[in-house]
Length: 542
Ligand code: AMP
Image (cartoon, rainbow, N blue to C red):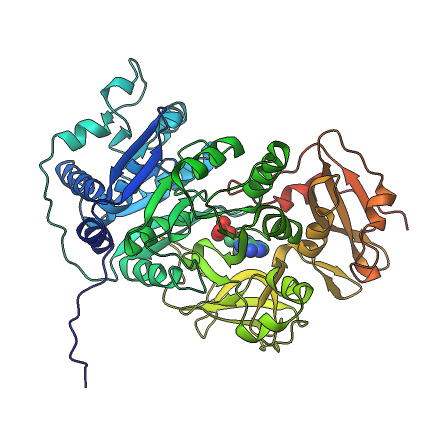
């Protein structure tokens, strides 16, 4: 017997309709790529998203077509999220930090019909265009005044002109909630990037989950500034969550340096932000140098890579900002786990609580997870047993877009994350490594992430990476590779002594190498494949 409730399909256009109707005068503030601050409201954003959908229809874009974006966090990108998906096409956000060859691969693989790009990326798209024959037109996300006098682009269109030609009041079509809505490619370090194709249903369910008190815990009274880019994993769902709750949204544009961010936090009364650890380390240094304090910022989500305990503590103790550590991936929409304490953990000592808070947190509703050994057998939740992390749920990828290779699903339908983790008795996940990065010493695993987190707690260390290098007796041993803070110095012996008493002695790295910088992926994660190549012939003193 079926229930007797209305079966309105979950659609992304419904979010912006809701915000325009019930929070029509709430602001969206953008620091523009062209310079200056832009302000408007959800009602304006809705009207312009509708005009955009009309313009796309006029350009011949139809249901299921892919439309690419190469853009910062700004109001036009926000309109693209709604205009493209709302009309039934697929909003393909592209990460401009990828190598040009990867961008060409992605655009051709997705068969994008149009690409919308920010002014910053004009030289980039001029370079890409000759290799992207499927693209019918390139749309500059600006006005006439900023159109280049001369360009090699085959068909250059102007965003504001496209919108001005459209009347208000596009009727959002109603379609199956499983219709594809958006596409994001994972930045593979060795393989070609793979496309994760989200649906309206998965996006809406993820948005509900993101708003929960034990997740982002945001309400209509918050002011959210996503530092996490809209060009990668939908800025962790914030562009959907903000209209769902109707709160003010602040979009920082290209200015992601600490001074610009701080200025915007203060000027707009930002209460909540989200981003990767590197951004927050930069902000912390700035705040210390300027002896500055936030007037309104009170909570942050940190994820994308492991949040070093030193960062968590500094924000909490020095700046009064609570960090929630979260784990997720492109394939999980991206939220998987978020760290908040359970009520009985509130009676633990501050140190015990802090030890829990450094973990990646508990599964949110909609994400089921387990850890398994090499044979696929489930491992206990005791906080000690390491295993491959598998997840499943309604906003987790089932297969990659136009993929010829088998996906990452187990026979019984779990997604292999490629991460190695422990889960404790309270359900807190602790990511110890990517499976390709684990260090196996004498048959036992050493967590490179734990060692990196410890190394960056040393006052002279700006960034650290740990990789396994061959060892005749133990198979592999950890090598610590370090970038020092400007003007700071530390000897290898002193740095290694810093690990004493903080990890089991056999976890301690065997050697330290100093470098000027570490290689990163396009999403800011340590590129350990490159480090392993760079240190391929490394021999440890035995
Ligand atoms: P991406 O798909 O680019 O967002 O990358 C997802 C991967 O980033 C995950 O599979 C993890 O390896 C890593 N990651 C994300 N969040 C965390 C975290 N909080 N701690 C450790 N690794 C993380």
